[in-house]
Image (tube, rainbow, N blue to C red; front, side, top):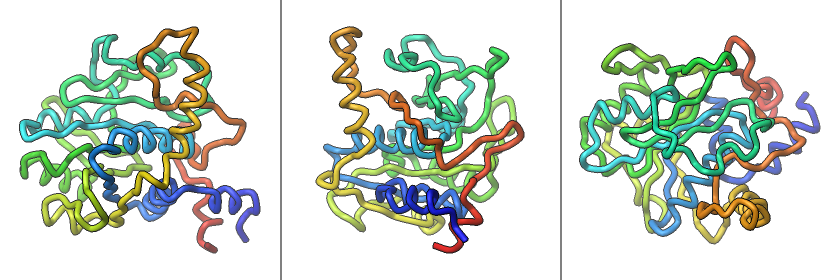
Length: 257
């Protein structure tokens, strides 16, 4: 029988949170789309969902027609070196976050570099990968993404990287309405869910984060209004990451839903 508190949490999830939860439970992947003028808000909302709701690390890959296989492979990793200027100026505002995994962003050539508790740089694939405008990337890059999903491995210049136990790959695309967004055919067929987000439905976590950021604006003077993972909560995330590997605390309970 499912725990009542857990069921309350699940019933309170937004559509985007529920889509990610279903992918985590089924170990599948999804495509999310929205109109072009809302895609940046959608990316930031998904970043907050990954950290605030599920306690998972993430990267964003900004795909273009010039994205190379090397760009794509390196951007998947949390541990690649990056200059301090590539970090969000708001990233260290709450160093004692309750989130299980510290969020990270990445760009095709300059992904961020989170530290392990010992202070050493790590190199691993993030739990959640947001591939922005993946449909614009060359077909070879999209096929490489498909191979990552099939094998849960990717070859970089210096090593073979294996996806973590909790791993979700999410192309985030621009589309005027539902059913229009797609990637290359074989990759499209491999995706478990396709969801079009109407901006009129709002961005729940982002709107909450905006409220907190507005209160901080006068003291920080930051020109960046929105930053992922800045809101804290007394509620634990639905995903808990143990010392050995992450696990979903609600797998058994959610089978009754």
